[in-house]
Length: 359
Image 1 (tube, one colour):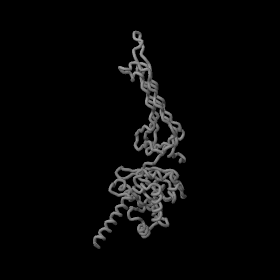
Image 2 (tube, rainbow, N blue to C red; image 1 turned 90 degrees about the horizontal axis):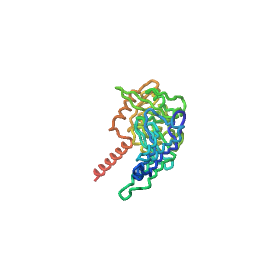
Image 3 (tube, rainbow, N blue to C red; image 1 turned 90 degrees about the vertical axis):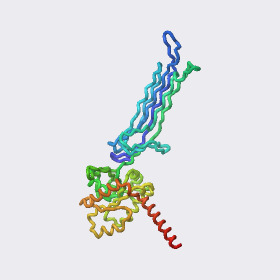
Image 4 (cartoon, one colour; image 1 turned 180 degrees about the vertical axis):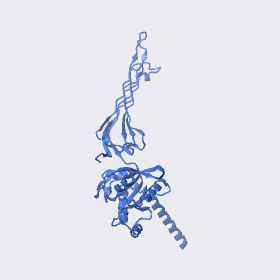
């Protein structure tokens, strides 16, 4: 789950603080040795808190922080003095982090915004002192509550990259080259498959000082949804992208087949990914003439906007940025699944009209 400086999965043992016990103390003064109960409440145990930090992009800093233990609450004291609350433990995590219980697999917390704080594991409540229980009919309670116990267990933190656009394609499709051309990111680039082993993020500058985030994800191979290649390891990062840009190289033997394979892998992994906006880009297009571009365009799906570009000659990069910006800021553009649903409804209406005409 981790390689180099990129860590997107971490397993830790976390324990909140237990609550302090209440005090069963009785006040004694010089002139009144039985002045009544004055035992204070116990303090709250420390929470384990997750806090979002936009300056972090990996869980690397938690690799050697495998035991997270919050402080116990202090016991109550005489003179109605409440015990001190246990010190909270704050874990800073990158945006897009999800927290799970390892045993049940239940999602317990999710961090999406900078500065957002979520009490992941609450500390135990402090016990009541005996002064809390005094009443006209019970003026000298000799008991107090113990503090509530702490909560502990093995937990899992999992990071899903947050980006506006995710690059999807087979290994060596030109994703890293595109990222290095339109952003300041410098991913590893080489002429062999699986050069990219970890997601890379970059900010794409756009007109009028605007920008959007784009993520270069490791290449997908057929069977990735079953764990082949890098498999599930990075398919989950695609779930957080608003727009998916499919990259297919110009020298592919069958552009439509490659696109269908990629879409099928996403659908098999998570059908909800089809609700995202799909865009298609043919990379390495400097080797194509106009006739070849027309031939390739004819075999591409009609319901997915496409563009030809070359990172080497920078041909078509402006058109690509325009297409991405429009998709990110045009809510009226339907997702792929919605488009198919609308087409099915239209086909149904046409069949009804045809039946009515026959009658």
